[in-house]
Image (cartoon, rainbow, N blue to C red; front, top):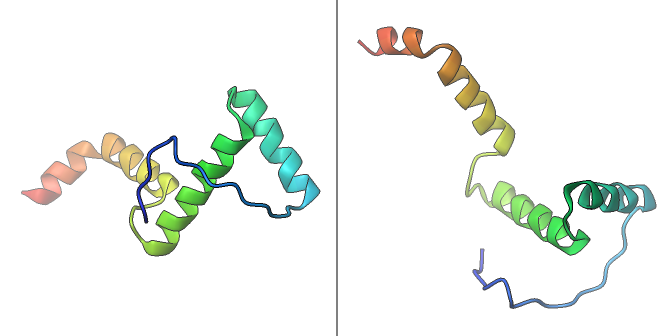
Length: 79
């Protein structure tokens, strides 16, 4: 994925399902973030997932939960 600084932005136009757009606007408002920031983050995560650059967040969260919960078992299995 090309790297750019945060100040480099390019305008583009697209269309979205009204329900999807309203949900994104609501999420941005609840998080105190701009819609543009939320969309940029979503696009970056989509690109990373499609290019296989990083594991998905929910997969990493599940791994961390499992590691914390079963640390003793994993250590014994490693012996």
